[in-house]
Amino acid sequence: MLAEIVAVIDSIGLTVMRLLPVLLILGAVFAVLSYFWACNPGRPWWCKRELVTDLVYWFVIPLFARYARIGLLVMGAAWLFGINTPQGLIEFYDNGHGPLAQLPMWAQAAIFLIASDFIMYWLHRAFHRPTMWRYHAVHHSSEDLDWISAARFHPINIFFGSVLADVVMLLAGISPHVLVFLGPFTIAHSAFVHANLNWTLGPFKYLIAGPVFHRWHHTAADLGGDRNFASTFPVLDLMFGTYYMPKDKMPDAYGVSDPIPASFMGQMAYPFRRSGSEAAGVRSPEAQTSAR
Image (cartoon, rainbow, N blue to C red; front, side, top):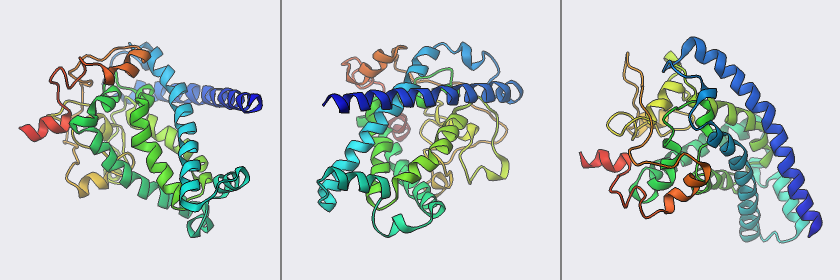
């Protein structure tokens, strides 16, 4: 047992050490870019009112997602394929299984990106329904939206909104190495779409999500708050009627109507408060839109 505890502590330390240079690089890159191409000129990201809270998310959420993903994958493999020995589970996690795991890495990555984005599009829409909104509202609570806000997700939102999609793809046969291969892209792109940039991406705006596309999603419900659900490919929003990118206009106000605590622990407890969004009569963006 002691060896397992030490291994977990080492893994946590390694994850933190890997994140530090990533955060420094992202911070420097977006500081320069937003200086020249800010969507909403004003205070820089390092003067953000809830900077400490967002930094805590950047270290806590990746660790939670990592162990939740591994745990679900182990349980799923044991249930679906009858793999119940430590060595068998390790081999499964290292190599994947079935025909998909035999494809070249680039092909597996393409399948993963397209299929997982389709799954997460619908999961994202589900989190905008009244029952699940209180968990997702934490992500929308940032009024100073910037790249550092990208990790602000309640663990329940992460668990049902992305971890489950990843586990489904892994159990379908995609190699876990694909997640490692796509990791830098996923982190950079998530920071990019939340960054304070006025980039619409021009003719490529339908191919890949950009800052203006996603920043509209963080606005009020009567603007884009119930639109632009795709994480990577906006064509999904085009297909299902939720695309929103008005010409010659930029989003300029973010956050939610229900007051959400600024601290990390306060936001962890927020969805379970009786005075939360449902008790206060504050409806989710999708519910507000359907009521009009």
